[in-house]
Image 1 (cartoon, rainbow, N blue to C red):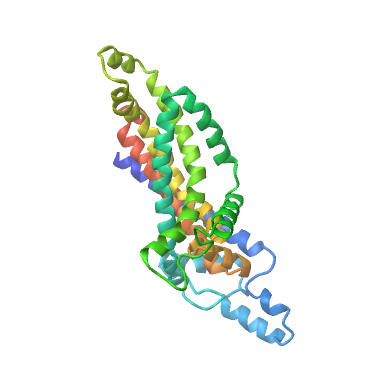
Image 2 (image 1 turned 90 degrees about the vertical axis):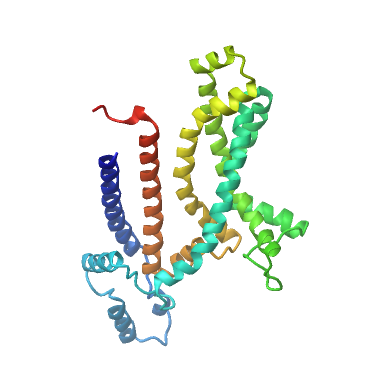
Length: 315
């Protein structure tokens, strides 16, 4: 078990190193740059542009810039934002709580809905037909379109919920924050709940066809006990694995959701940095996102390896 965890951790480190090189090269190869805003300003002289380029280290060869960035990043020095001069780590830390709140509540809601829908559709065929239509629509709907529709209906037309932000200017109480959280949470949870419920439905139906289920049923167990205690327990391992893997990917979905609802999280910070070609902020965000995906994949593999003896290599 320990050797397996060490191998997976080594693969994660190697993956992060390769991704960092590719992302660094792609970002610097994109048109424009941190100095693009100054190039069209007639009041900024070429000498000023060259001085700024030297101060930011952009005059050095790209490999030298990467080595310098990587060394500082590993030491915990993530540099300063080219946009406002603030430390990148400070900018990320102040945005992380909002994103964690959004992703945490969305994940919890998606898991609860997926459990209810997945179990019901695996047992009742009539429910399964309705659920199939609903989940297919949930998976197919673009996140930004669903967010705009919910804003139009519940914020603009009905006026029941706020359309954007994390809190109102006039109030900052718990209920005000909950009201601002509802729409982005629903948007982020819909697609994941739809996909997870279909996955759980398939796992449940596979479990219900296993021979041990026939044996349990022959001993007179009720259908509810058969479904919830025996079939669900068998189906929860692959379901938990896919939820764990998708939890890290929700950060990318949060970028779109936070942009639509002006949610002050790291997704909004990424959009701002992308528009300004803020290299240091972009690299920090992309590396954190890549690390989250890689680490969650590693944890999922380790969990499956520990819980399912069939995945282990014979001694």
